[in-house]
Length: 242
Ligand SMILES: [Zn+2]
Image (tube, rainbow, N blue to C red; front, top):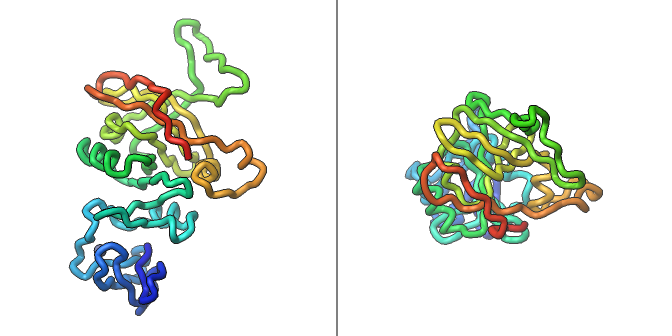
């Protein structure tokens, strides 16, 4: 999304504009075609950050909510997609990763949350929790955040190995914050729903000064050690607060 101009300022790709990669400092080419999102490209066509995942419209949209200095922040050999004002990295992902990638990035960034884009074809659905033994909807604690059950037919299985908080971007349905996954060939579990603006508020981006008063921190999701088929045990002491 950004290159560095001769004064070291972050600039967006525009036709004929010149810029350098903020990490490796080579000249970048502004690709401003009719089909792809305008973006910068390394001349070698290989990004110096091996973790870089092509610049989709979705990446651009999320990054555009944050001030330029909080976007594509160089950290060692990598560029964090977003770093919030409290120093939490938000990793934006449109595709599943390998289990190793999940672990390596979590170790590298430490203070981070995942935001994965979920497609319709993944068949993710949430519903009011139901107690099948009592054959009645679960009674939710008044005054507490309402939680939802989910089922995910074609999940990104790597997420069962994430130990940092995982948020799913469901498109028009907003964001789903996963609190517990029961792994397997498909996932079930529970979590919370939040709107895009609530997610941004928790990331330090204020849209609505009234609802911002209710903003709460990202709660940590517990680490999973072991098999995907095992339930993830919630460890409420693992907290990452924005
Ligand atoms: Zn570079």
